[in-house]
Amino acid sequence: MMMPGIFGENLFDDFMEDFAFPSVDKTLYGTHAKNMMKTDVRETDAGYEIDIDLPGFKKDEIKMQLTDGYLTVSAAKMVNKEEKDKKGSYIRRERYAGNMSRSFYVGKNITENDIHPKYENGILTFTLPKDDKKVIEDKPRYISIEG
Image 1 (cartoon, rainbow, N blue to C red):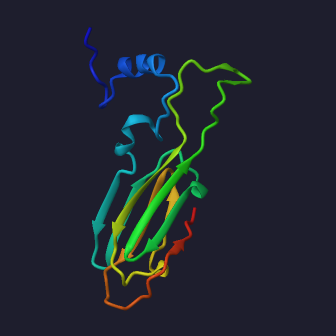
Image 2: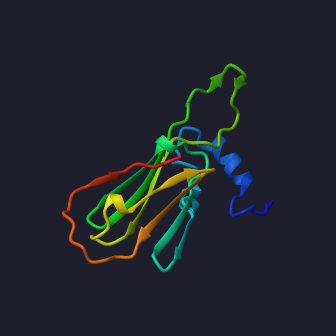
Image 3: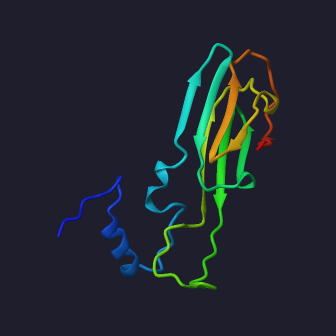
């Protein structure tokens, strides 16, 4: 019997797959992790405003690194893998442990002091100035996130 997919997910097949292959390790947010970290980029007169969806993460699970002109946003989530907890045994688990990242080329002239990220309500927001041609040395630099 064919079952319709809901939002790109076939819930019946996913449910049956858990029974057929229970020991298969799944990545963060299952097979559809590619749909995570949805990003909006707006150009303004002064630069660019970026919003990245990271629902369910805590601020300390998100990292930003600037290396060789690339800004990499990464997020890692750990989930308890116990089969049982105080309330009972799990028959289906859809939350997974893992990590994801996304890189943006911002130019070699942007420094960590030019980026002011804020994480609030599951959205990482930051602005980038337009490239003003200053020369910066090449070394990894980490950026702290407010929120």
